[in-house]
Length: 72
Image (cartoon, rainbow, N blue to C red):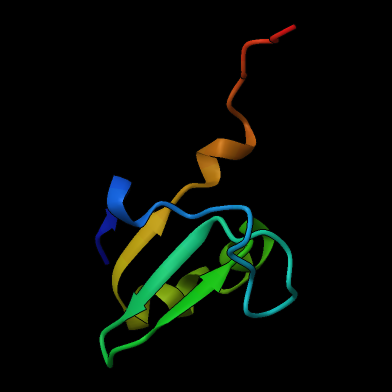
């Protein structure tokens, strides 16, 4: 499995987990074609299976812990 963060394929707030509908932070491009989106919780829960099936993974879970500057 290769983990990358590609600016051209960044996830947005409208991307939703295919399992539960929460905001997606992980895009899994499958070896067989197609893709799946996961929230951080389901990405962790299904991590072993994702590693088996993924051709590429865009992981943006770091956004959950980033500190953003406060603006007025």
